[in-house]
Image 1 (cartoon, rainbow, N blue to C red):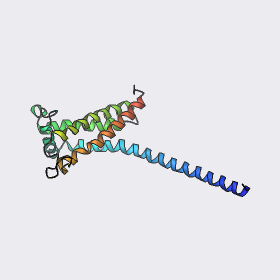
Image 2 (cartoon, rainbow, N blue to C red):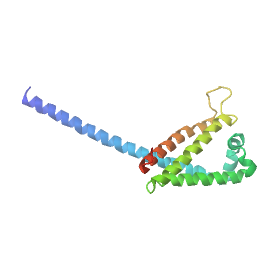
Image 3 (cartoon, helix red, strand yellow):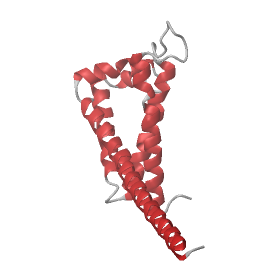
Length: 176
């Protein structure tokens, strides 16, 4: 092999290593941004929806889900629609604040994430108990726009809560 060809090959290899390094750095930055978007996107969703629970509009909006839920229907025997909605809003706002506390306390964030997991597992049961989840003209597995498609998004929110819980637990050193 000639010296010129060897030098050219070495230059191509160096360029390839440099480009691989740039791609790896970009991938790492994108992944880091994704982690922040997952955690704080979850916080925004919980805080926004939690804040809405203080309105009569939202109290009425969740009443069908709560009334038809074997897990939650008894709540209306103890509290009015509005009182239950406000209580749920407080829990959601607290959950959001705890998850957001991750830079200060991984333990608080783990608690908030665990609360969110429980919340999303509960809301996913509404897929089974709420009338009108399936679009009757198309049959299963076609989900109605409301409430079916509205509820199915909680699968992704559950995944985000599980991830934030795992990450925060690992940071506390309490994964065993």
